[in-house]
Length: 476
Ligand SMILES: [Ca+2]
Image (cartoon, rainbow, N blue to C red; front, side, top):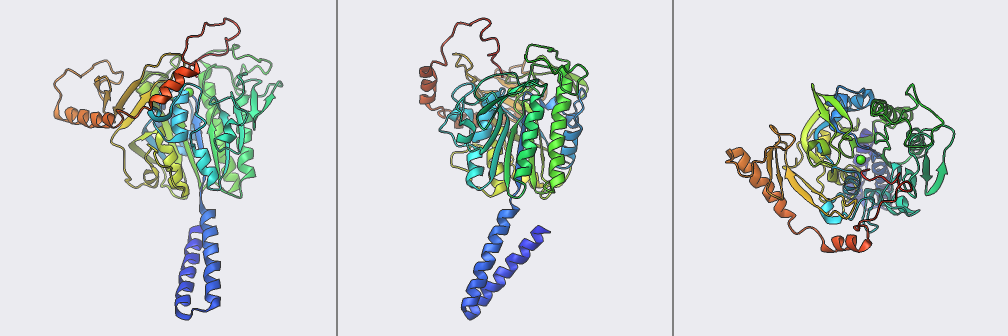
C-alpha cells in the first residue's frame, strides 16, 4: 500500500515537472518542490528497521530448521519459514574476531588488534546507521572496550550491556551497564530477560522512525546455568560458578529462542514486522563441551577451531515486505558481509575499503554476486601468542596459507591433507582459485598493528593470580 502511494506521489511529481516545462509558472515550481519534499520524506519513511541478532557460541547444528535434533527452536524455525535460511554462513572461530569483522565489514587481517578490543579508530555499522538518521541501540554482550562511552563512541545512541566496564555475573542476578551506568540486580532477575526488555523498550520507543538495533545476545555462552524456565532455577545465586551443568544448554537454547519470539511478537504488535529486516546469526561454533545430534549424527561443538565446527553458524533473515518466504540459500556468506548488506538495504553508502559483499539480492530471491570463496585471517591474541591461521575455502575445498589442502565434502575435520596428493581436475581448479584468493591478502596486514599489540603489553605473559582472577577466563 505504501509502495503504491509512493509510486503515485512520484507520478504526480513527474506530471508537475511536465507542467513546469510547459508553463514555467511559479505555481508549477511550488508544486514540484512540494512533491519532491513529499516523495523524499516518503522514501525516508520507507526505509526498513533493522534488527541484527547474534547469539554467543551457537553453531549451525543447534537450529531445528537446519537439521538439529537436540533442541527446540520454534521461533527460529518460524523466522526461517518467513524468510531465508542460509546454509553456508561462516563467522570467525571466536567472539572478538567475529564482532570486529561483523561491525566493521573488514577482515581481521586489516584491523584486528587483540582479544576484547575494537580499535577506537574503526567505523562501525552503528556509525553508519546513526549518520543516516537511524535511531541506534545495542544490547547484550559488549567486551570491546571498557570506556564509559564505548558503545556510544561506536555509534549506538542507547546501550544495555554486560561486560562493558566490568565483569559481574551475566545470568542470575547480573550486573549490566545502561548507557554506561552500572546497575546490579539482586532479586533473582535473569540477565537475558533484562536485555530483552531493553530491546522491546527500544523498539517501542522508536516505532515511529527507522531504527537499527544490534542485539549480540548473552546466551548461549557458558556457564551453563538454569534459566527461569528450568525446574531448578535458583533466584538466590549470584555466582557464575553455581549450578553449572552442560545439560542446561538445552534450556538456554530454548530461552534464547523464546527471546527471539518476543522480539517478533513486539514487531507484530506494533505493526512493524513487514518492513523490519531481521538478521539472526551465531558468533562462532558451539562450546566444545556440548555435543548435539545433527542430521542423524553426533556433532561436537568446535568453538575456537578453524574447522567448520568452529565457524559454521546459523544465519536466518526475514523481511516480509521485500523477501519471498521460506527459501534456502547455499551461497557462501561471511560475517564481513552484514555491514555492506545493511548499507544496501537502508540506502546508505558503504565506506571505502570494506571487504564484505552485500547479500541483499539473495534476500530478495535474486542471483546477486555470490562469493566464490570465503577468507579467514584468525589470530585471537588472548595471550602473547601471535600465531596466525589464514585460509580460504568454498563449499567443498579449503586451502591454508601453509599449503594444507582439504576436501571438506569427504573430510570435514580436516584429517587428510591433500597438499602432496595428485589432484583431480576439479580439486586442482579449486586449489588454484583459493590460492588466488589468498594471494590478494599477502601483504594486507599493517605492520603497525602487530607492533601496537606488542607495545601495549597485552602480548606479554602475565603470572596467573589464583583466586583473584578466577572470573577473568579467556575464550569468551
Ligand atoms: Ca562467542
